[in-house]
Image 1 (cartoon, one colour):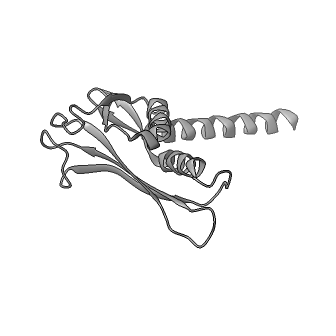
Image 2: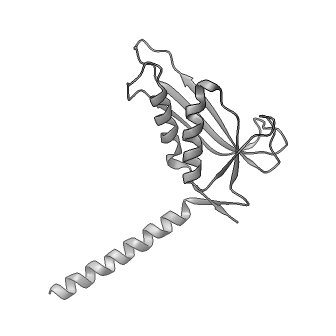
Image 3: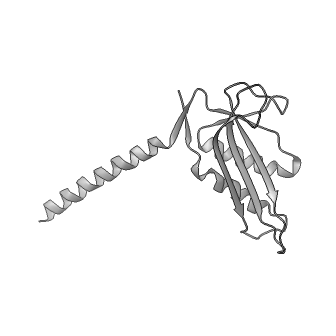
Length: 153
């Protein structure tokens, strides 16, 4: 009896392991060099650049600065980020982070470029400081939950 139940358990474990491996492989996308361009951040938002670079590096992207802070090469990836501290009746203002990863069609980023990924996240907690840097950091980290891993061709 014990042998039979252990063999059934091992069979189920192998089936589950195979399905998890297939899901991990399907959460990637192929790109020729996995390089992504980032626009320079203001001095107030330097902390967000560190979080953005760290999260992109986790997903096998190589970060580069935008040329002249506004130019990219055609078919190159670039990230567009917008941070808004929303007005509120509360002492601690919520932070809204909008993140887009796009593929450039021309030498300058335009609104008509193809969007690979788009996510908007609003965070109201944690309430550590009045400025809300920690809320914006966490919102940016939350936006990366569904970004696929990059695999070089």
